[in-house]
Length: 168
Image 1 (cartoon, rainbow, N blue to C red):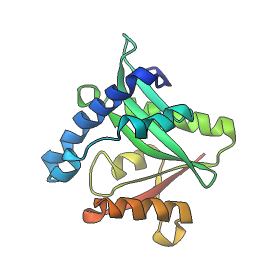
Image 2 (image 1 turned 60 degrees about the vertical axis):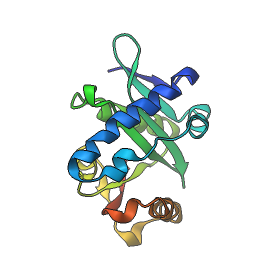
Image 3 (image 1 turned 135 degrees about the horizontal axis):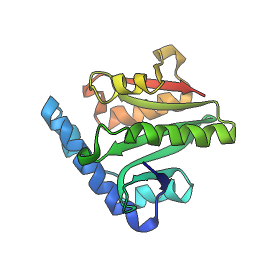
């Protein structure tokens, strides 16, 4: 599936993808995650403006998944990757991650990082299949510790979470 940069007029579509993808969390007893609102348009915009937002598109060039990233201590950190459930299990998330990895390699970035739920099948176990490995708490950099602190303040630590790294 083709991956390209997000267009300005597609930011609301990203919100809709995020809401739809989040519904799956209700089925596994995490309704708070399902009900969590996506980033606002103002929060999405800096990722697009920095060239760190991509969409996977269908044959009509309509977004069906997206990835946003940020630069954290010389690596590219996956802030969010979501695929609309109508298009799940087709390798779209992996395509987005591989696209980010290609961008990173082109820039000489050594690794991708992310944080995720450990016990959600489409989270940590999936990322292991995509080449990520869990990081022990003592291996976390100050930037990753800051991200984890923000997540904890948002209430995400109600469920086990982990930082992960994919060396490039």
